Image 1 (cartoon, rainbow, N blue to C red):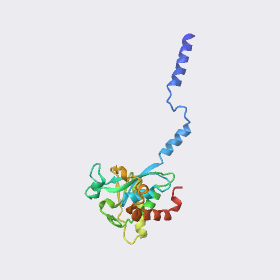
Image 2: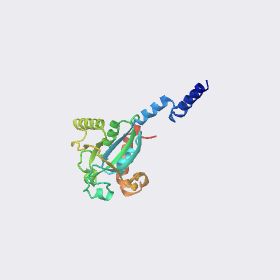
Image 3: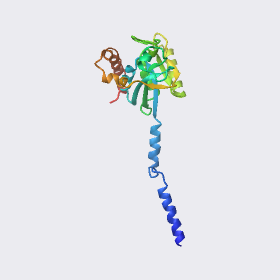
Length: 215
């Protein structure tokens, strides 16, 4: 009788203490959290100076964060000075982290197309060089298909007088830019470039996409 009681106590204790820490967590809650995690996506876009791209997408509802950086080139750990010399192959880009349950990748591209000139090769306004080229670096096959279809639709609709030259390429590596580039417009809005170039683009975006702005 004592042995039976011993083994019964042993198995109860083992069952209680051997369970994972989250064993008592509501199963529905766990599934919901996993589902929410799966809605977080990234887009990597080049549309001229990354200060402009960052400032625009920071204000877009559904966007969690925007990180300026470099992609598309051959140089490891590129610096801003190296990229500006136009011999690294890198493009100034923004890595946009967004919640796809709030805003889709297609809507991200809608803002992308509307806030720069996708018909000028290696140039946006007075910013000239390969580092300013218009490009979508897709992170998966679905993004590639969406971007390609959207680009074809815009070309067929002749939204611009000239054809779109935006490249659609796979993302091989994203290199974050130096810290002083981050949140640049918000921190340096009084500087000449921000006043003359960034601010007009931001204001144009806010007027066109008023219903998509963060509260």
